[in-house]
Length: 282
Image (cartoon, rainbow, N blue to C red; front, side, top):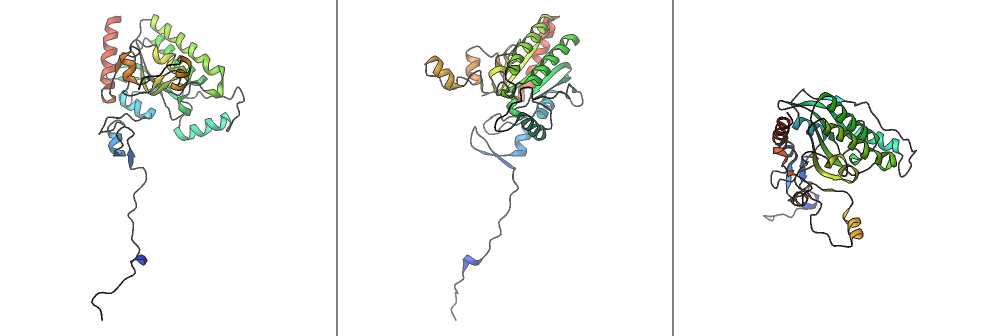
């Protein structure tokens, strides 16, 4: 009888250890695999390279506003299909899908709360809702936020993120640029501070209106900021475009932005700016 015997190892079943989905995230900045819980505890910032991931509106509010002090305004406002837009999917079906996905009626949440010891008006745009496109509800809520804060004598901070105008609403979407800009002009005439925070991405109509009309324009690192896309700009200007020309650092160097702030330092920076501007106004 042979000391060794042949075995058919192909018939042996190996029990694989199952790993739950969603525990790890690949960082687009450094290509490292990051534990999702570690990412969340680090304000959605890669602990290895500092890449800033997108944040939900709830995470933004919790990061900037003191616990149990945020009072939401006008959460009941909803978009309507005025134009009867049809495409690969209807506008009402898109709205229903995004309401279910995010738990909110539209792409921005507004209200007031305490940031450190300062009472402020706050708006937070959410790219997860139809790319944070600016439709009538987004424009109306931004305008109401600014007007209420003008009446109450409060400074305003708006965390901006947007893919541009909401095509489902056509011209009605573009009209929001003028409406929000007019409200900001009246807020400035009252001597009140306004700080937009530009996050990745902030583009098109939002970038060309309330996102860049602040007393101090703040942006997060490596945020994509611009009006038109690189291809359109290149075809229009007939010029080669420099690398990173629509990123925060390039725009800071060329004067569009006032400061680029890492997320972990954002709240402290905003508090210091608002305190300085409130003393100056007084």
